[in-house]
Length: 465
Image (cartoon, rainbow, N blue to C red; front, top):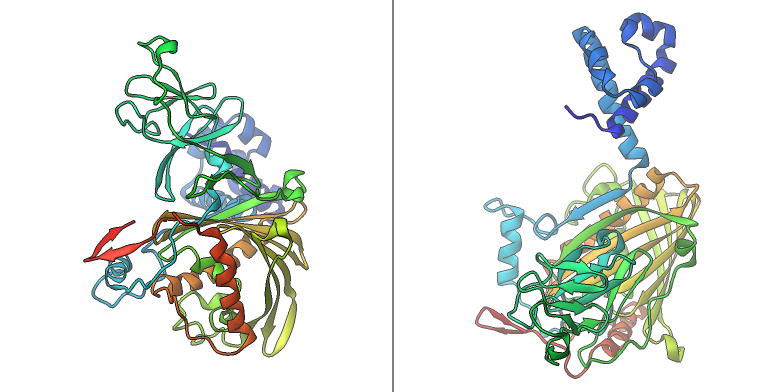
């Protein structure tokens, strides 16, 4: 039996709280000599078995409930949130004959795709989270129609190269070994420099005889704000801009409090387009957060007395060196029985940076923070969206988790739309400032496509790209 220190800490906290509630003397009368201090539990974990063996069944039950309850309270209050929802877990409505996962497959087969723009725009993409790439290890990633090997050298720098060895095609992300800043192929031991992609060593060949074609493509990469970003451009053009550093995160004023991850069945352009589509806010996000994510039922429940009010404005940046950025000013209010609840007011400044990055800094009555979005194509019409939340150090983690949960719930309502819609290349728009923003957004986003950007075609139920 192995007892983790986390469990011991929870047990100690639970016993401490129980002793405060009923009084230590009373607790000692109930548990007798089995009462131990937090220090004893922490320093002598092996003694826990001895104490427990002397408990009566009811005493064991009380202690067990206290320990389990203490553990879950600690998780709720102090552990960062990690919410993952994959394709088929939400966003579809089962018809009673098949479950949601099967329904997702049926919708993908039957859905009309529409005349979609190129599927992989040019720009920086968050392909991994920094914490998932440890020194000396390699990760395989399939994004943007590419199979990549991502590794961190022992000195800390991250490199991204094509996964397949040019020698005999082995996947270096599977079994590859990291030596310095080089990645060694597991098949024959060829090593490739992560910065240049050139072969630096062949065990059975003199280094002066290494063929010039013995190289893999290496991609521009940078790390900031908790993500590993890779530059992709269909024409092979070098980066013309970089994602900005958020000073409060870099200096540690704001700390990481959790993440969410979703997989969406849609064209990449449609997801950030919601930022400019201000008319959808009331229809999709007006119902109370606690009403859930099923758009067909969000107004048919006991939470109809509460409503979210949104006011948003989307604007593309006009500065020559910031044309890849668009700004959204957003305010939020919550009402209950027609009265505004100021505790949940929120003021948001969102910046879409290129085709797949959004930084949302926000102010609330509890303090300031930021949502960071990394949107990356894992297939022609399949996107992975990762959200991180950072908040001021003084703010309890449970408050940050509440905001992240709220953001995830609203995003999952959008997923129900995205997973089931087709791309409307020629939407029927009305003469209004709301629909005018959608048209303006599409013109702005088109800058991220170029002549050789991969396109999606449908031929007799076969996908070619």
